[in-house]
Length: 437
Image 1: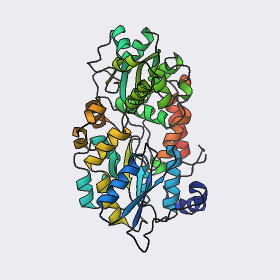
Image 2: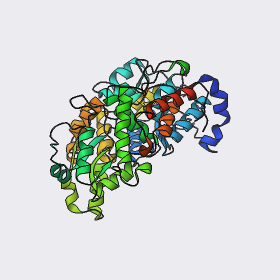
Image 3: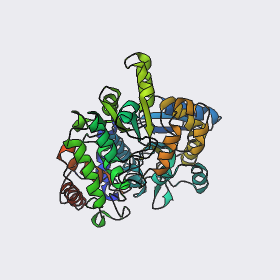
Image 4: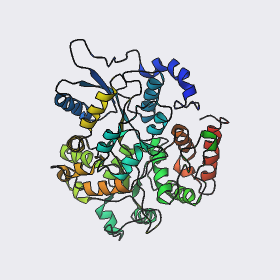
């Protein structure tokens, strides 16, 4: 992959030329038929059908003002970014509503690919939104997308292992404590060590929890970007990754371990502690109900906030989720924002949480009937979202993230004395056009 950056206006021609490769031969028109209301196209990330259900609900509630059809984006985050960026750069007018990963927001907002969020819409849709989700929907202090759902990682643990290790899980715990506890019990510690977006998520959470930031001036142009990796916070992050990798605590599959594979490891006899998303709970319950996991496993699973890097210092859990944006070339911008207000209503957010496992961005949705019964850790998730920090909010996120993935993997090769500096030098060279990803 080269260092092409689709968020720069001068790349429009190149992005347009590659549009067909990214989106396939068929483009949805998003046009209104002569006999019916306007059709809004909502580009959605893969889920368990929840967004399609909400599209039907909001179509019914629109009373004929519009209909919403969904178009599925690729499952890979990088492929989602590429498809959206290419369509927007080509002036595609079907981009009525888009489900956007928070790191995509600055890259699409900076060149003007996102339609402005009307002030009244921004005011209504950001009331009672958790702090992390609101931060991820802004660029240069302006709301440029609407928070829909907000994901975060919490610390899952096996109660039996924590008890045997003498760890009091009613108190905040540090990475060093769970490393020591897992090692003392000869168990594996669940993290995501694959060369993928999950590595950037992990490194960012560690650096932020240590009081640092991967990008210190995210609004700056490429040639002026300052990175905070080669710092005390970066060194502490590297120490944690390195220890887990070099001592084999992540398990034999750590170099390719994703969220799903780390969950499977955690569910087994070698499970101890794991940082992961809320999907772990419904997935584990479903496996128990299907008889593929022992019935007593559920009672042995506990949860708490993401580990601290330094004892007594607030943790900064990962922030994920989805924001909703409207393409600047959409023919139906007003209707699209009407539809978005329906989509992100607290009722629809709580429905999406209980049916698909994706946590609400709106605090009110956590009080809806059925939420605490379906997710008994809902309060921990909400608290985690209030503490969460987004990944670097920069138009050059692709370069930063891919650079981290290439220099911080495999975890066993990470060296606290050299990796932070090497990583910084590589990313800065890519941003200056001196190296390719």
